[in-house]
Length: 201
Ligand SMILES: [Zn+2]
Figure 1 (cartoon, rainbow, N blue to C red):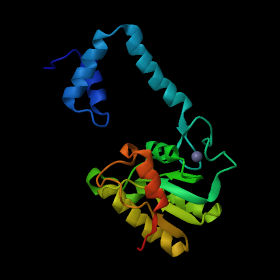
Figure 2 (cartoon, rainbow, N blue to C red):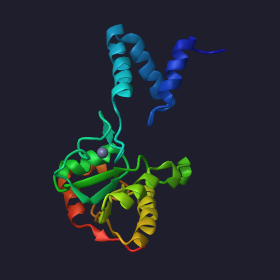
Figure 3 (cartoon, rainbow, N blue to C red):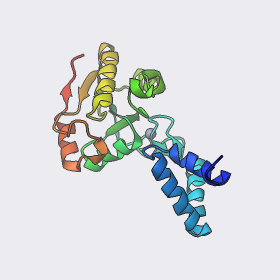
Figure 4 (cartoon, rainbow, N blue to C red):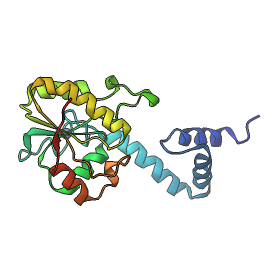
């Protein structure tokens, strides 16, 4: 027999699907939502609906975007010969915040992770290769996270891109190993970008 009324259990199940939310947290959030005013709870529901309606992924770099192309891809002042490859839109934001990078981006929307069943074909790698063939890109900076998945992804991409005659670089170490780009402070990440080195693959 179910412990909770069906709608409550449904909510707990849905919340439990969110990244980083375990069963206990899902339960806590569900009961919090039951307690708050209807208005407050619906504001959350509406902002989820709105983001799904209005925001999509940029057709060029797969950053989040309100239009077909994101603000960065549409900006004519950006250097189109250099592309910074990141895992997620939040990493793009972290690099942007350094103010050190004036090129373009490519968001993979993840990293290679055999444990989580994510292979190269689940990432936007085919789209990256298409861009390289058509956009006059000369350098690719592999700006994936300095953890196992990020390093594996960088190595995979380096092996794929080097034979194409591109300059392939990796952000310098100095970032906390095992960490996430989004948590690196701007100065450290800026230095890591500046100190990027050629990747031998
Ligand atoms: Zn874009």
